[in-house]
Length: 166
Image (cartoon, rainbow, N blue to C red):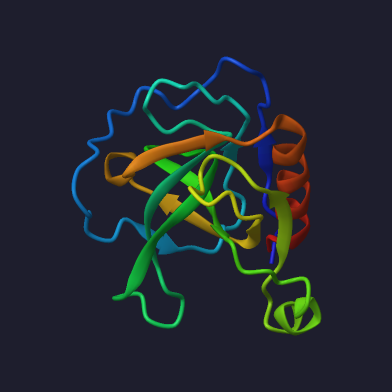
Protein backbone atom coordinates (compact mmCIF):
# COMPACT_ATOMS: atom_id res chain seq x y z
CA UNK A 1 0.00 0.00 0.00
CA UNK A 2 1.39 3.42 -0.93
CA UNK A 3 1.88 6.01 1.71
CA UNK A 4 -0.46 8.95 1.77
CA UNK A 5 0.83 12.41 1.08
CA UNK A 6 -0.52 14.91 3.52
CA UNK A 7 -0.01 18.48 2.47
CA UNK A 8 0.44 20.50 5.59
CA UNK A 9 -0.47 24.09 4.93
CA UNK A 10 -0.18 25.14 8.53
CA UNK A 11 -0.39 28.81 7.73
CA UNK A 12 -2.76 30.91 9.82
CA UNK A 13 -5.46 32.65 7.90
CA UNK A 14 -6.40 29.85 5.52
CA UNK A 15 -9.66 28.27 6.53
CA UNK A 16 -12.64 26.28 5.42
CA UNK A 17 -14.92 29.13 6.45
CA UNK A 18 -16.64 29.26 3.08
CA UNK A 19 -18.95 26.56 4.45
CA UNK A 20 -22.23 27.69 5.95
CA UNK A 21 -23.23 25.23 8.65
CA UNK A 22 -26.77 25.20 9.93
CA UNK A 23 -26.86 24.55 13.66
CA UNK A 24 -30.19 22.96 14.51
CA UNK A 25 -31.64 20.15 16.55
CA UNK A 26 -29.89 16.76 16.37
CA UNK A 27 -28.87 16.11 12.78
CA UNK A 28 -28.84 12.82 10.95
CA UNK A 29 -25.51 11.00 10.90
CA UNK A 30 -22.90 13.06 9.06
CA UNK A 31 -19.60 11.41 9.85
CA UNK A 32 -18.36 8.17 8.51
CA UNK A 33 -15.38 5.97 9.20
CA UNK A 34 -12.91 6.45 6.47
CA UNK A 35 -9.47 5.07 5.83
CA UNK A 36 -7.32 7.53 3.96
CA UNK A 37 -7.22 6.60 0.26
CA UNK A 38 -3.89 5.92 -1.46
CA UNK A 39 -2.05 8.83 -3.03
CA UNK A 40 -4.68 11.39 -2.12
CA UNK A 41 -3.52 14.78 -0.96
CA UNK A 42 -5.28 16.02 2.10
CA UNK A 43 -5.27 19.64 3.17
CA UNK A 44 -4.24 19.62 6.85
CA UNK A 45 -3.82 22.98 8.58
CA UNK A 46 -4.35 25.11 11.67
CA UNK A 47 -6.68 28.04 11.05
CA UNK A 48 -9.22 28.55 13.87
CA UNK A 49 -11.54 31.52 13.50
CA UNK A 50 -14.21 32.23 16.14
CA UNK A 51 -16.83 32.98 13.48
CA UNK A 52 -19.38 30.30 14.34
CA UNK A 53 -18.28 28.11 11.42
CA UNK A 54 -16.10 24.98 11.66
CA UNK A 55 -12.44 25.66 10.91
CA UNK A 56 -9.27 23.57 11.19
CA UNK A 57 -7.89 23.72 14.72
CA UNK A 58 -11.35 23.94 16.28
CA UNK A 59 -13.21 21.33 18.23
CA UNK A 60 -16.80 21.09 17.03
CA UNK A 61 -19.73 18.82 17.84
CA UNK A 62 -21.01 16.38 15.24
CA UNK A 63 -22.66 12.99 14.93
CA UNK A 64 -20.05 10.20 14.78
CA UNK A 65 -21.08 6.70 13.71
CA UNK A 66 -19.89 3.74 15.76
CA UNK A 67 -17.25 1.66 13.97
CA UNK A 68 -19.00 -1.63 14.67
CA UNK A 69 -22.46 -0.35 13.68
CA UNK A 70 -22.44 2.65 11.31
CA UNK A 71 -26.23 2.95 11.60
CA UNK A 72 -25.75 4.04 15.22
CA UNK A 73 -23.53 6.62 16.85
CA UNK A 74 -23.49 9.64 19.08
CA UNK A 75 -23.01 13.37 19.13
CA UNK A 76 -19.41 14.00 20.19
CA UNK A 77 -16.57 16.50 19.99
CA UNK A 78 -14.40 16.31 16.87
CA UNK A 79 -11.13 18.15 16.19
CA UNK A 80 -11.23 19.61 12.68
CA UNK A 81 -7.77 19.07 11.15
CA UNK A 82 -8.35 20.20 7.56
CA UNK A 83 -10.41 19.73 4.42
CA UNK A 84 -10.84 17.11 1.74
CA UNK A 85 -12.70 18.86 -1.04
CA UNK A 86 -16.08 19.92 0.37
CA UNK A 87 -15.69 17.78 3.50
CA UNK A 88 -14.05 18.64 6.78
CA UNK A 89 -11.44 16.21 8.09
CA UNK A 90 -11.78 15.44 11.77
CA UNK A 91 -10.58 13.27 14.64
CA UNK A 92 -12.97 12.31 17.42
CA UNK A 93 -12.42 13.14 21.09
CA UNK A 94 -13.35 11.29 24.24
CA UNK A 95 -13.17 12.04 27.94
CA UNK A 96 -12.43 8.37 28.64
CA UNK A 97 -8.84 7.85 29.79
CA UNK A 98 -7.08 5.32 27.55
CA UNK A 99 -3.69 5.55 29.29
CA UNK A 100 -4.59 2.57 31.47
CA UNK A 101 -5.42 0.37 28.48
CA UNK A 102 -3.05 1.85 25.87
CA UNK A 103 -1.46 -1.49 24.96
CA UNK A 104 -4.86 -3.16 24.44
CA UNK A 105 -6.07 -0.18 22.40
CA UNK A 106 -2.91 -0.39 20.25
CA UNK A 107 -3.46 -4.13 19.68
CA UNK A 108 -6.90 -3.19 18.35
CA UNK A 109 -5.35 -0.52 16.09
CA UNK A 110 -6.63 2.41 18.15
CA UNK A 111 -4.24 5.20 19.15
CA UNK A 112 -4.96 8.18 21.39
CA UNK A 113 -3.19 11.39 22.43
CA UNK A 114 -3.99 13.52 25.47
CA UNK A 115 -5.02 17.10 24.68
CA UNK A 116 -6.10 18.24 28.13
CA UNK A 117 -9.29 20.06 29.06
CA UNK A 118 -11.01 22.89 27.24
CA UNK A 119 -14.19 24.82 26.63
CA UNK A 120 -15.48 22.10 24.28
CA UNK A 121 -16.49 20.13 27.41
CA UNK A 122 -18.86 21.87 29.82
CA UNK A 123 -17.33 19.89 32.71
CA UNK A 124 -13.78 20.66 31.49
CA UNK A 125 -12.77 17.01 31.71
CA UNK A 126 -9.39 16.02 30.25
CA UNK A 127 -9.82 14.74 26.70
CA UNK A 128 -8.02 12.44 24.30
CA UNK A 129 -8.05 12.51 20.49
CA UNK A 130 -8.14 9.28 18.49
CA UNK A 131 -5.48 9.73 15.80
CA UNK A 132 -5.95 6.58 13.69
CA UNK A 133 -9.57 7.17 12.63
CA UNK A 134 -9.93 10.07 10.22
CA UNK A 135 -13.51 11.25 9.76
CA UNK A 136 -14.99 13.19 6.87
CA UNK A 137 -17.73 15.54 7.99
CA UNK A 138 -20.36 17.41 6.05
CA UNK A 139 -19.77 20.98 7.28
CA UNK A 140 -23.51 21.66 7.06
CA UNK A 141 -24.14 18.95 9.65
CA UNK A 142 -21.74 20.23 12.30
CA UNK A 143 -23.87 21.17 15.28
CA UNK A 144 -21.72 23.75 17.00
CA UNK A 145 -18.27 25.15 17.51
CA UNK A 146 -16.73 24.20 20.86
CA UNK A 147 -13.33 25.87 21.15
CA UNK A 148 -9.98 26.17 19.43
CA UNK A 149 -7.26 23.74 20.45
CA UNK A 150 -3.90 25.27 21.35
CA UNK A 151 -1.52 25.35 18.36
CA UNK A 152 1.15 23.26 20.12
CA UNK A 153 -1.39 20.57 21.00
CA UNK A 154 -2.78 20.63 17.47
CA UNK A 155 0.72 20.11 16.07
CA UNK A 156 1.25 17.16 18.44
CA UNK A 157 -2.05 15.61 17.28
CA UNK A 158 -1.06 15.98 13.61
CA UNK A 159 2.33 14.37 14.27
CA UNK A 160 0.63 11.38 15.90
CA UNK A 161 -2.05 11.23 13.20
CA UNK A 162 0.66 10.93 10.54
CA UNK A 163 2.35 8.14 12.50
CA UNK A 164 -0.83 6.08 12.68
CA UNK A 165 -2.48 6.63 9.29
CA UNK A 166 -1.94 3.92 6.65
